[in-house]
Length: 276
Length: 276
Image 1 (cartoon, rainbow over the protein chains, first blue to last red):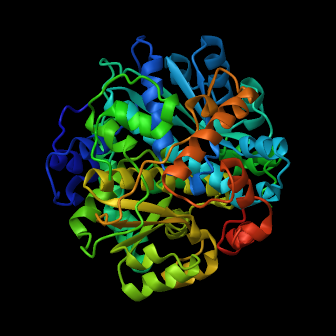
Image 2 (cartoon, each protein chain N blue to C red):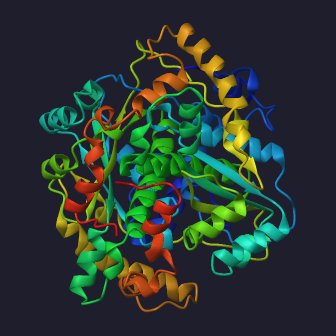
Image 3 (spheres, one colour):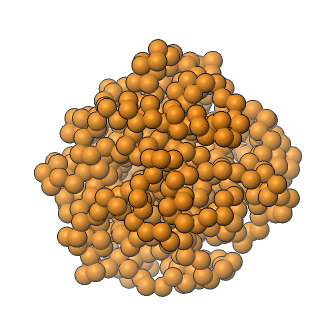
């Protein structure tokens, strides 16, 4: 990992020449956020329950829609279970290798079970809005957990591959109806032999609109980014399917590129999210 | 706001008697995360563009699925636009009152427009998976921005009401197809006259499962929480529709409780998210 915590240096790594002038140069929270990079190689050192408790408390401290708390998380440490989950996500070795694998769930089961126990109506659970609430709640929670982990010196990577085969992931984790894996998260101590780098993002001008959405933001700043990203790929000797536009569009070219996730709507219905 | 940054004290506020013993008592990042509470009253002091830049850089530093960056944000400061958005969210006064209102978007338009410019296929954009990616990307980004804002002494509150009338919000913000507001976020300097409190959440045992999902987590720890939450409502003199189970289930009793969000699936299709 880059050792710098200076906000200006971190902004330059994130934006290249397009970096804004920072408000402040030293803030431990801002530095932690800006320093994020995905970590996919770990030392064998375990992640303790004490660390997991802190990540959980951070996760639960995130906002949640109307305090409904429509999420849960499954902590997986057993090697064979991690191996099977890795296979369900297209053989991602870091899922096997990480000492702690978290599967973040949209969870409407808790409300459903509570409504059943107390004989209360709950018809809204069948609507798209409640799937959204579950996904948003799980994601807010997970991001706080990720920040907490990084603040404790750990590294994480999100695993969207938990949506490749949702029914099989559910069977592996014993998930009840009205729960579904939103994504996974590998957690571990970063392997110092495999340093990682801050990846540049789109210029701020591409994503920040003022008062109303400006379609021009999708042209000039995106073109600028193609150059910024190309320079990064060269520097890191990364092999990509062309420039950012080309390899990104390659990933969304059609259902054949979706690794099974073209079935997600169907899988969600099967998991008890009719999402009408 | 509570002035304590001691992790133990913050955990007790978050969990009551069920608080875990902390790993550490002093960590500025963990303290910032644990100190979160929604802030709905602000001083008139504006939020500067410098602060917005830092929030944006934090947001862009969050993970994003395959670096696709399927999100955008609209920063609204014009009083009349905030007033109209407040009306579209059921007259939430804090949207009018906050100096900066951010509307976080799932944005597949950028990829669509880029694919059109470079004549690249993009059929996956029509699938549920890509709506999920947009919602997850926007939410990861927003939560980092929220943490950055709080680290700078600001207060925020998420506004799910941006999903009450998605087509009208889109018209107000000039949103192109394949973009939709996931939620809003009020940002401002907390009014010291209206202090806020850390709200207790479910015991960790209700949301953390080990190896496999344990349905018993939805019974005992939820019953414990009914008592913890009741004590908090009494202490804060909050009026609720019964205990946590009763008022939460009341919110999901049926489409009539959803403030228009029973139409969300239809509105998403109209916004260019067929989500097949």
